Amino acid sequence: MPTIFHISPLIRITLSLLYISLMIPLPFLATFAHAEVPAWLLWVGIGLGFTALQGALSQRVVVDDRSIQVNYPVWVPSFFTKRWSLAWSDVKELKMRTTGQGGVVYYFINGGGEGFLLPMRVAGFNRLVGLIQQYTSIDTTDVYPLSQPWMYFALLILTGLLLLTDAWTISTAIALGSQ
Image (tube, rainbow, N blue to C red; front, side, top):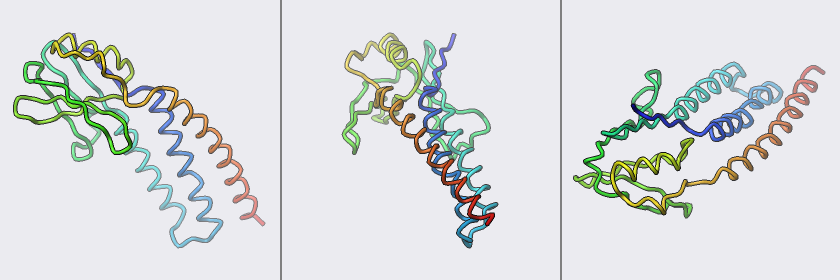
């Protein structure tokens, strides 16, 4: 029976709200400032961007006794995402790499030397790592998620403050626009 891991709800909610908090004031400010770009066009762009974000956040990691695969719902275009599947028998190692920001990510390396990024923002990451160790016999005791939940919780709190600022900005733009 396959086990399916989704992006953590904390991450999904935080990134969705951050996008909303950054984008929603723009059409109101464009109307108030009499910008050349019409507000309706900004609303369309915001809607398309939000849909793209939700597509990216709909990643699923499917693990069974034969393979691990990363996929997305059928409505997410394949040119927009990186889908992959890797049989456990093809996994030769789990290689650590540092990121440009100083974090650590891991790649599955197959027999041909090709790398497949280990999804690290899934709910139940420790369970996923346990399954990797079970199916590959690779020692995963030093594998930790890229960012800890407290980081996203802090970002969620800051995003809430930004949403309050947005509410004030939008109400001010509407009030000044009606004068």
